[in-house]
Image 1 (cartoon, rainbow, N blue to C red):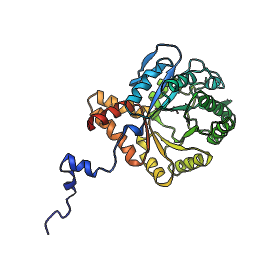
Image 2: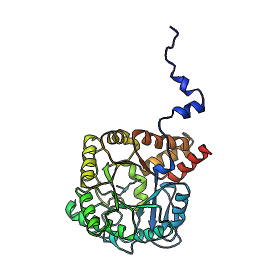
Image 3: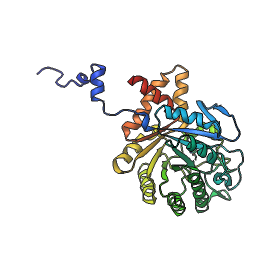
Image 4: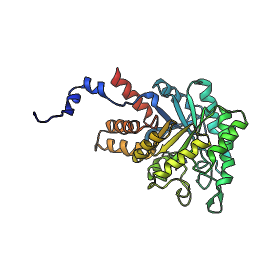
Length: 327
Ligand code: PBG
């Protein structure tokens, strides 16, 4: 018998055959682009911790959404970076708040774009925590009403999808009920279900001015050591009415994405967070690796693991790279 008996390299010998047998691939339609909205007008400022990512005032946000749309990306995930903060994060549900105004502007100009919003109090509370405090403790049940009101105000302003990222127990059920009671039965809930207490959120907290003023988020976000618990969280959220469940971060949690995609029957979203973006791009900028190729490889790993939706700050760039490779 001739050695070697099996030649796996046969199917790798040229670009044509590699293309023909490729199991997965990235598409622009897989992506959502996060966008940051700030008060004021005529503002487009780069976020120092995230080169290439900008904060926009609500009058400027449509220029960004236009580019997103041109790239063939179906949706944006909107984050508010408000000026005013208080103990209860009341600004979050203000019908004239920055996110609400941005939503109105976006949906007026681009009715087909999927406008999703982050629902969380951390950018709106003085404490920088994701819920309302009772002393130094985050009061789960009191936070639910505030989060539900925030979600409803987003739906009223035109959000197609709300994405609770606070990690309070019962928030999906509370938000679903609040939306349904007001007639927003079609508003989609994409829940940040398996959201870990991660060091990879560092650059985002600079971007959104949402770092906790004291302590950390370990009493509500998940312990990175846990896997079975992630499936439990996702199942609970589906049971409470989540249409899409998310794993966050993505790169260090590919095992969770894979497991979720095998045992759950709703679309899985992977959030490739700020730290993943800044880490790869800065290594690229230093010449340590090819930043663009490494980023595409990282995003592909999320798709291969089973994510249907990938939320990434690199969405526009990735979509352009995919298109160039095809043309
Ligand atoms: C709000 C929120 C955070 C992120 C998304 N929504 C920050 C946090 O939980 O501290 C992180 C996103 C990123 O790092 O890209 N709670």
